[in-house]
Length: 166
Image (cartoon, rainbow, N blue to C red; front, side, top):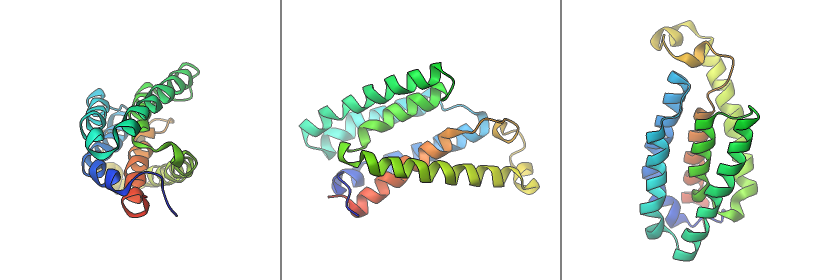
């Protein structure tokens, strides 16, 4: 497997994206909200680190990914298929993904979404885990904390990029 993201770019981005991805997943499970501060933090990572990690033309064009995903997320939110925080976080994740990796990223999306759903539903069925985090909103709600999957997606994509990037 070879990814279109340069390995060097993934190496630059991963140390910054890793804690943000975990923060988003944790917070979404606990409060069923993705903090705007996490969205802005990831935005600023791309804004500041992007020019160091990517060729300037690539860096500039990948901002368009944010616009396209934000518009799609806005529509999905309007029809009730996606939360607003999920849409915003997905949009700020988009510039990190090389256009040539779009199909691969869709596979990562499916894998992480299914894994996150299984892990979350299993965890909430275990009384000891629920007692360890008794006030987490995601234990009680029917909807799913998609931030858990989104955070994993970004981390996994960049980690794969470090190893398999061009």
